[in-house]
Length: 317
Image 1 (spheres, one colour):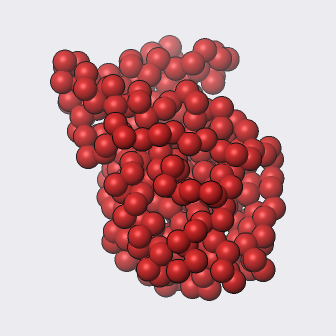
Image 2 (spheres, helix red, strand yellow):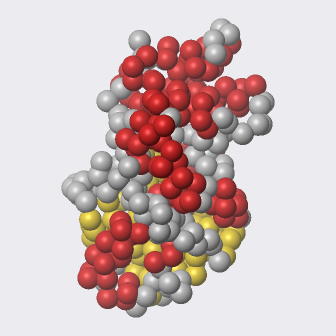
């Protein structure tokens, strides 16, 4: 596979397909994509705020004049860094899974704007939140939700190009979707793939995430655009699959030994995954696994999890 440089901006993958990358892929620095054919365009995700989304759309219009009027926008899931810029894609049909659309309503940009203002009074967790999210501007965002939803699978045509939307969640979030372009052997994975960074499993179950990786590994694809990180191939998919298999095994052992989720997260040796960015996300992943193992269906305590992540680098053995 051609080596794609991990640099900010638009990358031409060939045959009317583009990836828009945002290094370093950490909190909020997500990727997006453009699929074009015969004057029709489909945008895969917007970005975390209007400044970033406007910059991306300008770059796309320079490369593909038809992108001046996006026909279809697909939001791969409900995290704001993949849809808060929707308002700038005027007149497009906006498509997401039904579960994603419901999740979007629960985390509007106004919530993050409020947290930005209160973070300086919140001690260690506030400092962590500021470090993660201070580069982004949430005050001026008008949340625009999907106009069309689906469950399972939805096949679309971008002029003559077939595009398959496949729901693989709940996993990272409740309604994760991947976008497959069969004839071009290309796939946009949303946040089912973090490359070079630690994935974060807010919902699970972990088997769904592993199954999503197996689904991609079974496809005839060679270019894969992750939700965060550099363009990859099936080796990137395998790395994420193996991370969750390793973490499931290590977490299960500590769960059966009677450790708390917080104790287990600190006790697990990251091994070959220690070099991945945002290692503190293991706090969320272990907590999700513990709730899965125990059958606990109550929503996670987000504040407690952010507190755990904030202190993780200092407390890790």
